[in-house]
Length: 288
Image (cartoon, rainbow, N blue to C red; front, side, top):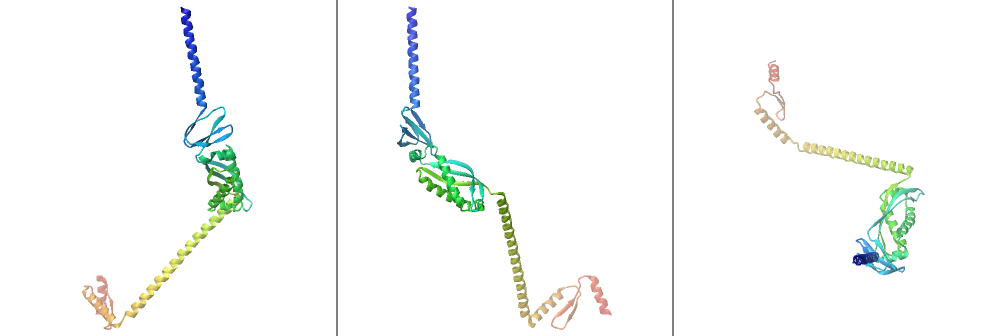
């Protein structure tokens, strides 16, 4: 009886382990035949080397892991950083840090993978090196360190687009950025001296302009004073002088201080002090 019970128990354990093994195998098969596409990615199924025309943007893709696989690619903006030496028009080498901003078009991933492969960024780098050499050779080294840099970046980007479109469609080039431009030592010193000279010239021009304006102001002021004197002289008639003399006598009559007035009857010439000491001296002179 005990043996029968033991046999039944062992049989149940074997059945449980078998079921557990089958479940693990099934779970492994399901997980290996399912791919999850996250936001910012696209997935495309490749069966026996052929890409499916359908591109999955988000969600899950079921496939046969024996004959198929799912290739995932990011559609987010990527940055390729390069450190290289660029040629200039005068034959100098300018060191620069370059950033190439790009991204994939989700619906054209198959074209990129078929024509360029998964290592398509190396193709972008090669296209950039060629375009940058052609464009930078048309500009002076100092232009790469000035406001002309934006024009250089634009020309390089346009040339890259033309060359890359011939190879594959589906890569969007967003921008080419030239950073940390390092001019040759001798040229850098020359550029600094030139900039300093330009600043000195601008400062001197400002000083000369200020001096010129000040001179013009003084001339205008002198002309104004001269014109005012001419107007006063022309308007100073005998009648006005007599009126002013009467007004002067009237104001003198209001003062309590003693005055000496010398006049010809027309215009007064008065001598007077408001302190008592001077009045006493005048009285002494009159007594003598």
